[in-house]
Image (cartoon, rainbow, N blue to C red; front, side):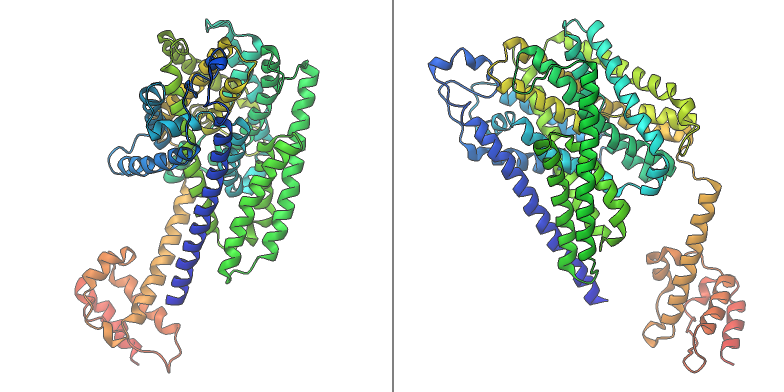
Length: 603
């Protein structure tokens, strides 16, 4: 047993060292991109004074920021994250971790990076990171945030509910995009064009149920509800990103930014959507087949190095599938990653040597990336509202109005499709529909899209000051909605789940749990009787045993009598020893039954 434990500890340590190396490599890659972008934007001459308005949030006249400072911010926020997580788990259980990080980032950006006179190291690092290249932002963050949920989804339930999830992910996302665009066009006073409103709506269409998913696992919610929420998030993230590319291209073309802007009609837009979606799925499936083959070749469960290599293979497949689909094939990288993860779970889930190590690794990746992206989103939001003309006091009021409409639209769409969803796939009920509507949180994917759009427009020479104000307000609204849904919807989801009765165990579940507990109690009691045949344990204090072994608490004479009988039947007569229970009998109400049974075993 000691060898096995030592082996497992070494394996986990080695896996985590590999994890840290991988995360370092990712952040170095992002830092290089940040540094590359900053080398041309942080040295401004008098001849570039007019263009400095476009880059006023990252550059200062006559100053140069050393690229090495870019390393500081991600690990500074990780250190803050450790402190925040400790305080939240010990003192403030109701507050969501990511929401607190976003608020902390907001203060860092508002009172730090937005102050032009500040030249300290942390502020320099923040200014470098707020100008990170949009493609690098996608490539570093999205695969790591999406692959874990795809790999760990219950494939059988996912397959059974795929029709429902498709309706939740595509028609509802498109309808939500259109309705949000209508709100932005007719409620907001910003005079946004319809293409700009559609882009804004597509960003807000991506949901992030990370807080709700953790709650569902904690209270033992119905598996159907869990797969609906997690599966919907996976698929609608993919569709939302594709809609973002389609509508974002129209918006950039309208703004006169020719690098990524593309003019197209409705027919062309649908062609682009299906090309990116189906193409991304094909790329993801191809990488999944290759990954399954690698997992099959490395299926030696007693070889710790091969377990580490399996983890490395999943990371490689996740990031290369995204890069190949997004950058090389011009397809949807998000759909490629999701397809790769789900297909790998389907065909290669049984070939993974150690699911605990695999899951722990991806938990760490998700935690690190979520910490950085939410803090970075808060920083950019805080920096934007700290600059004159970018964010006005009235925008806070419109943010509250948008939050109300976002929830109304979510409820309207879920219940519009409710009669259909109730009859297909796994089915549903009105309680689950209410919780699904309220649990549509916005998070990392939406913030990543909004941040990438803001950075791309800010870095483009063709962008005007009006364009900068436009993308800043979009990002501010997206960040504000993410914060409000995490704080309000996320913290109230637990009471709502209880109120709806979705956390209550069914009768069949209670019977299964009770049967498992009884079987475990019999097994522990049998092992205890075997130990009581050893002279070393004759005088053990049974009160201490009960304290440290909960399954032996409230032991009665009838249970012990049956256990003694079964214990004797399971051992060859020539090897059987009578257990010494003199220190156990005083804790039983009717010890005479046990004494009689012990006398029978001696015969």
